[in-house]
Length: 104
Image (cartoon, rainbow, N blue to C red; front, side, top):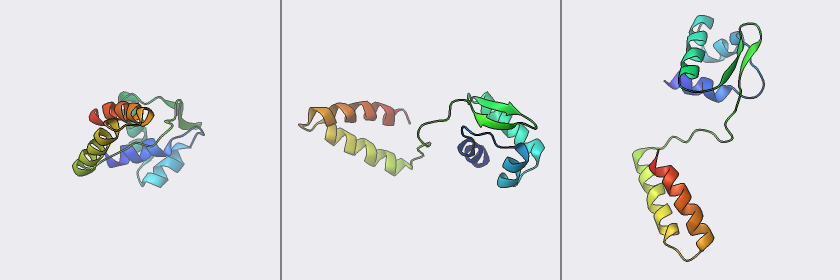
């Protein structure tokens, strides 16, 4: 799983050759092709083909956020405090972010 996350973070708008990606990950090209298939099966729009290079059709605008259980609890507690505050703009943003945090 760690390798798939690393691969998904390497892929961007500019294509990278399979040989280069495999070398960066320390795996054989055949393993890389299986990993690309796994990312596609997970819903990532990986474009490309052998000899051309691989890239994400829709690169994410932000990096994946991976939190420990304690970090998630702290984030949710902080957002609840801001949501209950007097600043309506911040409260609205905190409420929207709280919905996202609860879905993590």
